[in-house]
Length: 348
Image (tube, rainbow, N blue to C red; front, side, top):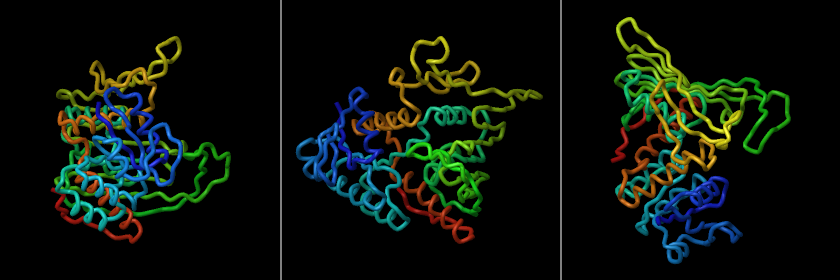
């Protein structure tokens, strides 16, 4: 059994200990909280107390941005591997200071789960298999900042080289019917900001970032993802490609979802296929988890395997730092109407 302790007690922390309760071979040994409270796992007032009494194999941080570097550093100083919630530090100086403190330890992973969501994982597999040839551009309009950058970098196969960013913002009226707290029942449009950015990774590789305030929850805005390649492109849940001379085919990515109509197996994700090939198979069938829960559970299992030494690092600090550095450049470029090239950071 591999165990972890979580620092924090918010909605994200709750997801980690709740999902761990249903994972084989993984246990949440407790949570470190600032004020005593009743939780479904043991509560500790400090990381010191938690480590001494619960003896976790690794630590998950789910704390505010500015608190993250201190918790990560404290855990690493104790020799504990860390899975740090995004972002690992709030700004560029904080990222560099955190790297200087713990980067050489090799003990820090970042809890970036978007590429592990079933639909994105299937898309990434299609790109890895070369179905659209060499990927050259990724366009993301669904999520914000480091999550969007992670999708762009991951689908492009981009490394940690400098990136040139151009960005702009516009404001327009938009009804906001749904937030994380639920339905607003407010039919009146509000002013919503849209940020659009281009990212030049060099070698003909680029990204397009398009995000409107609250786009995660606002169902009046489509989520869109496009991957362009040398032999075709992937658009949301469809692939167009050249398979032979004078032969262009379009094939849908099809999710098999149980629980519809006369299917009595219960509501669950089964597979995502392209033609006769399975691109993704849900490793947690029977749990009835949504895509976010599947992704976080996959990340937790991958982290536990890395801690045991049986699998590679799931998302090293160097990648999480690069994602956030580019995201910060997008925000700065949009706010100042400037073109920004990120520095050649030594995340190694």
